[in-house]
Length: 243
Image (cartoon, rainbow, N blue to C red; front, side):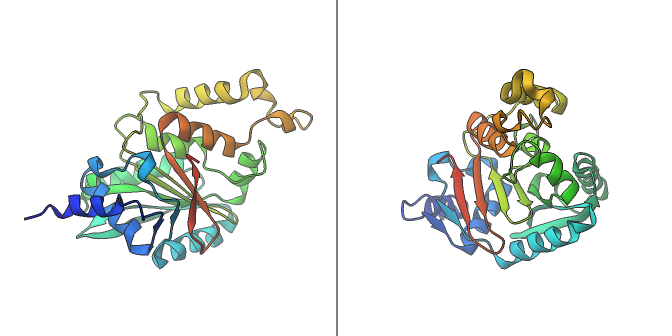
């Protein structure tokens, strides 16, 4: 009997798959929830991904709900062969609540934590304003990116509903992990991208010469071999990096 997962991966690797239509993306997520070996190499990710309606509904709802100043989020993974969303989360610090959510899943025993694929979440206005001080483009935060590359982490996909964009960052077969804790990771990239000007991020006179947090996204995706997609609400995701 043919290996179903291998067949699915081979199908997605065909050259004509420059566009993944709705169900192709979910099939891929289900594959990597079974085994990270099904992560594709950078060169095999499509130029464009169409999302199932359930993704757009969640992204749009989180985008709207976060106008109250609180971030929204959900872990997602696989249950019984379907993409499943766990535990709606609300708070103003997902650096804390994602860890609490994973601990809760471990304790209640209802879900296999190893089947978690990633996190879908929003950035409320107050967080967005802090991120945008370094530039105008909406972006994943450093902690969002850290969850993808930390040693022993379980997040393979980070999805974000921004003000008028959706951003998805995905691991690849080549993705490198990092033993740094978050503070060390933050300090490293702060120094790498901003150098001595790091403390002057809010200085208007120097702002034009400083990288945006979107530049952080591009640099970190290149260094750790991640894949970045960006799209408009309700629209397809287009690959931004690697170009």
